[in-house]
Image (cartoon, rainbow, N blue to C red; front, side, top):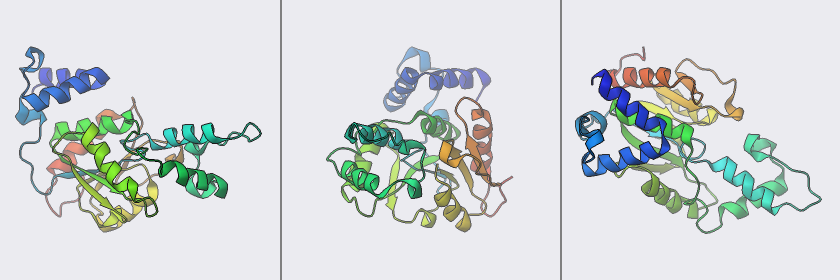
Length: 245
């Protein structure tokens, strides 16, 4: 890939409308004149080695779950209640009465499928596709919210490319990939326990601030996307059983 093509692609990714336009052009074979210099071979994933899989979490990575949940909780509180911002709280810090409200919200028809896209995770998604990874969504199916399982699949089909595969599980550590993109340290720890040579990209949030590990890059939007892209390229090129350099 030459520098001129890469620069054009990066400019498109920096603009939300450009991203949408690029995805549309990928789907129709780059019919737009502006993108004729790009090839599907360079920026799509027509053929991928079976091992070159990047796993993407949904909630807190590609989906703005906590912010929407927080907005809906605030709309339910009485005037006498103090404001509790669960967006920046760990699960063990949320009061029991608030958890009951959360369960009510999460079981509301259509709630999961209408969650907004989270830009920080989409930054990594587009970089992983540019490198050549096959994208697999890896998301935890809520044990007590069975309706969420089908709605999460609907969300993926609505917002991501048609070649993205979906794995829904109650144990993420069981699933293979060269790369995991996830915001939640306990899930990262479980996955790395079985894949010590794997690479993790962790979208930065207040609740994972301070988490550090050798195989983990914490992506802070607007600050270290070049570091993320370079790490993805090295992971893509890594041969089976080779260490992550």
